[in-house]
Length: 479
Image 1 (cartoon, rainbow, N blue to C red):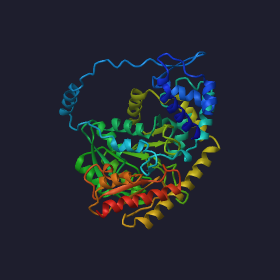
Image 2: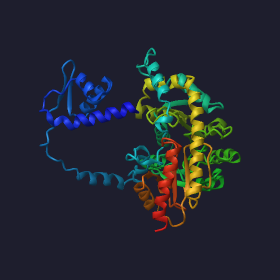
Image 3: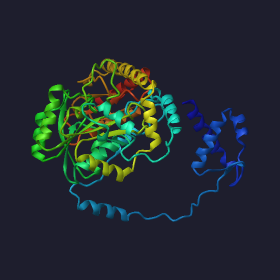
């Protein structure tokens, strides 16, 4: 973290001094910059590379770094207004327009402004990520024979076997495809299983990124309510009959955003209802590796209990590692596997082999189970800290369920609360939260907030974030 900060600071310093040099003028040598700014040669090299990528500096091996010629600012500004007609004309013939609102997804990917407590993040804070283990795995992977060659389009056999063992049951490596992250796997699954204009059943509330995938594919998300025991089977059966849908997307384990776990008595019922309706169940098993220390034994994936090919299973390493470690698996049985494979190949060819090799190195190392144990302990501590702080400082926000896995809490706001106003007030108070509206494919029954405890630096920041949220609530709820 210190090195990254130094690179950015040095780049900013050099950027501000470029006007001292005429175009083509030579900058001080790397040795001079090291002595002047008291940084390492690596920091200097990276800062110059950053300026070169911005087109501000040109580096010449053996000669040094020079100020680049200014860009030509005299080119005419184009007129893109014609695109409004072209894009709207396309949607006129579509049953479901494919205009996509990605704002809720972008909000979880974008870093908040400096000094803002990040309660809206969807990934582990860098201090929780296995950075050293990933770096070592990537280094070892790069030295493997053939590591930079073309991998099998389905993925490396050893990695497919590892994912198959994790899913369990009768799932084999031959029924697993390696994909570039869970989002990619879900996109492939929905494109394979439903034609444009078709309904797709989704949990309500559910992950906004999945709703965006469905709408981008021209599908109609139809909500099926969940409670603390997961989706309600009777309502699932009603929705399948009423819509004729042939796909139901669910997160049976630590559902996003409610944290619900599908109850044992509902698991077989969900599979039976889907099979009787001739429908697929897309199982998004996104946080199985982010279990809390006090969770107890986890239920197995639905795919492990499905001999009939009802379940298309998606799981990923990303949530438990880093946003950039995008390695996941898509598992299915029967003829649908060939359709999934064809779409995967057409869309991406394959996941880069070095990343697959690094995944094998990581999960096969002693550092992997140590990392998972450390994360389980830390997530429990963070969850308990946030829960206690909310109950003490914000008792008017209802917390109906405290999950034993995942990285967030789902809060119901008092009736009549303006979610957007609270979101804006919270940001002014220095804490970024996630409003509940984007998690519903139809009108929500109440106002909600989702608070993440994984993306912050630690428990002290959680306590401070809740204090700031208290100030925002005072502004909005008592207005």
